[in-house]
Image (cartoon, rainbow, N blue to C red):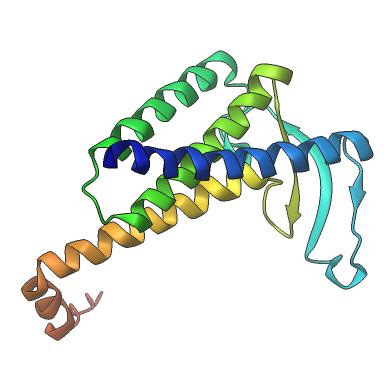
Amino acid sequence: MKRVVNLGFLVLMACIVVGLDQWTKALVRANLALGQRWNPIQGLRPFINLTYWTNTGMAFGQFKGGGQALTIVAFVVTGIIIWYYWQLPSGQWLVRLALGMQLGGAIGNLIDRLRFGTVTDFIEVTHFPVFNLADASISVGVAVLALVLWLEGRAKHPAAAEREAASPPAPTPVRE
C-alpha cells in the first residue's frame, strides 16, 4: 500500500507540472503569433521576454529535427523514471520530488510533440535559448537529483570528503 501512495506522489507532481506547462503553452499559442515577443513588465525587457517559438529538438534547442527518435526517447525516459521511482526506499522525498518534476516535464513536451510535431517554447532569457516550463522542470529536477546524489555520496564517504578538503591544491605546471 505504501508503494501505491508513493507512486501517487509521482503522479500528482507530474500532473501539476504537465497542467501548468500545457496551460501556459496554450495561452502563448492563443495570444502570440509565431516569433512574436511580448513583455508585460517593461523593467524586465532587457533580461526576459515571452516569445512564441517552436522547437523540433530537445530542451533548449538541442538535437533539432530529432522527430520520431526524440518521441521514442521521451517514452523510454518516462518508463525509466517510473521504474527508478518505484525502486526508491522510503524517505527519499527530495529524490521523489525531482523525479516527479522530470516526469512532468518529459510528458509535457511529449504531448506537444505528439499533437503538433514540435514543442512550444516561450520563455526567452538573454543569451539563452527559448524554453518552456517543461524544460525548466526537467532541468531543476535533474539539478536537485544531482545535488542529492552528491550529498549522499559525501555522507557515505566522509573520510574522502575530509581528505579532499584537507589536501593542498595540485601544483601548477611551469613551462620553460
